[in-house]
Length: 472
Image (cartoon, one colour):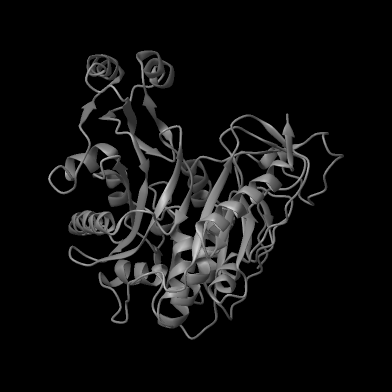
């Protein structure tokens, strides 16, 4: 079949009845994670070759990836079907990050996508959908024999709510002093009263926030009104604790007892709350590492008892006196998931299940497979760092960094000492794009044998990205 639809901006997918398919719906940045899903399904459920179809919102000058379908409601009017561009600087295309809800709604309602699903289900009895995050706006799983290969979306929605998290974890993990405000009037008055005692600052978050969106560290009431004055949410406010380490723990939960710890990385946080990347291995002490694992297992068992199955993450901070404080649950895959798959692949015994296979078993059978093994030390001495190049003011791209699909191979070569260090730049859209504030222009992943070389790779990668943009 050939996909034809006005809302499909680009596709290089051709259906084959001889293959077993699953769908990936999400951003290009986690495209490669689907190879691990593909391998897990190949091992477990079919003798046919398994392939995935990636439905993404990313508009790029070209795609160095197989089986792509691009749907982006904001980009329809500006898309040029043959990818022919005018002279640089004239009539540039726009690049922005589309709202997840809007994207998932568009995909769910797309007639060509639904026709594709009908065609696939004539040849296979089940179609899985792999998502970065299970969201309510994804409704394709209402189709008979279509299911999400991830956490239940209603439970995920419940536990991505910061208020629910803190109420559920009061007696389970150490929390900073905090309060809940039901509206902006309460927020303004409560933070004003607390300024005298919470002198290091007050962290404010809406019920739903991620990567610094809908949250801020405030030091006076003017900042509160400037940042949140136009909103009227339910807010979680907490005493800001000065710190230098922001560890994050990635895990999988299969039931109310079984929690798998993938690893601990250190987040790169700027401005008190804005996430721009991560580094592994973490610099936390062994005692702190044990605490972080213990707390994450407690959180995972709480989630498991509520019916959550699949990958999740927990963010923490470590105060200057060494105390560990819980910050939030990410009831979804998080930014370290792909790199931890590459790390586990090199450190675990051959044939060990990777995170997507663990999630598959957790979701479909509420258990882990019998050959499950956790990583016991970084035996291959892999160090890595990621950097998300986020645009704060409007930029014009005047250069292009070709899409690099070989991040997995980079990890393999460093682990095998074929390379001492290397970095890749991923997901650059191309030349002659107006990149709007809030968008991620590209991503750097640096892999080496020590953190100093990782930092050098990130610095070089960021330098290359900066050479491709100018003020617009």
